[in-house]
Picture 1 (cartoon, rainbow, N blue to C red):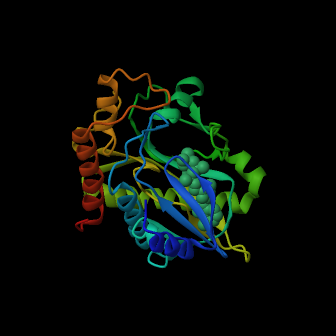
Picture 2: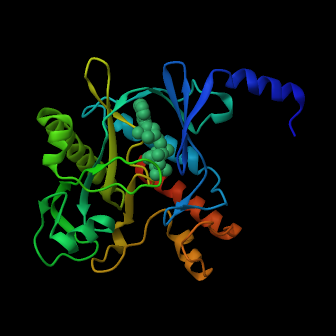
Length: 292
Ligand code: ATP
Ligand code: MG
C-alpha cells in the first residue's frame, strides 16, 4: 500500500482525468478538452492479452509513435499536444492529444499480403474491392501498395473490409480520396525509412480525425509494432508466415507451452519477457537510429 500522503497527491494529480476507454493495450483518459493516450506494458498475441507485462513496451511504443509523427509532418498534421504535460504516473508512456472527431474508418495500407488481407484475397481475389493478380502467396509483395479500409467496430467485434466506394458513401468522395491518398503516402514513407534499417513494413493501420474547422489530422498511434506488421528484411521468404519483429519470441514460446490461443493467456517466463523487451527496444533503435 502507498503511504497516505502519496495516495493523496496521486488523487490530486489525477483529479479531472477520467478513464474514457480501455483497449487491449492502451487506456484513454479525458483531461478537460484533451485526451491522454496511455500505452501500457500489456502485450497481446492472437488477440489475447497476456497476464505478464513486457517492461518498457509502453514507453517504447509511445516514443516510436512520437518519432514517426515528427517524421510525417510534411505529409500530415498530427494530434500531439505534448509528451511531457501528462499526469506523473503516466510519464514517458503517455501523449496528450487533441480530441478529434475520429473518422469511423480504419485506414489500412498493405504493401505485402498476409493476415486477414490474404484470407480475403484467397476467397475473393480482391481485398476491399481491389483486385489483385492470381497466384499470390503468403507474404508476397504487392506491385503497388493498396488501400484496404475496414469498419471501426466496438471492442470484441471484428472489423470488416469495406470497399473504397463504401468509404465514399460513408464520408463523402473528397474525404475518401484524401484518406486513401494520405494513408498510402504515410505507408510509403514508413516503408522507405524502415527499409533502410532492414525492416519491412508489411502493412499498417491509421486513424484520422477532424478538427471543428474540418482539417484532417493523423490521430491514434502511427507505425508502431502494435499498428503495423514489421518483418526482418533479411529473413523475408514469401510462401510462409513471416517472423514478426517484436512478438515472435512470445508466440513461439506460447505454442510450446501448449496454450490453445483462447483467454486467459499463460504467464510468460522471464527469459521470454526479456527477449521480447529487447526486440521492442531493437525496433525502436533501428528505426529511429537513436538509443532508447
Ligand atoms: P484495440 O486494443 O483492439 O486497439 P481499441 O482500438 O478499442 O482496441 P485503443 O486503440 O487502445 O483500443 O483505443 C484508442 C482509442 O482512442 C481508439 O478508439 C481511437 O479511435 C481513439 N483515438 C485516438 N486518437 C484520438 C483523438 N485524437 N481523438 C479522439 N479519439 C482518439
Ligand atoms: Mg486501436
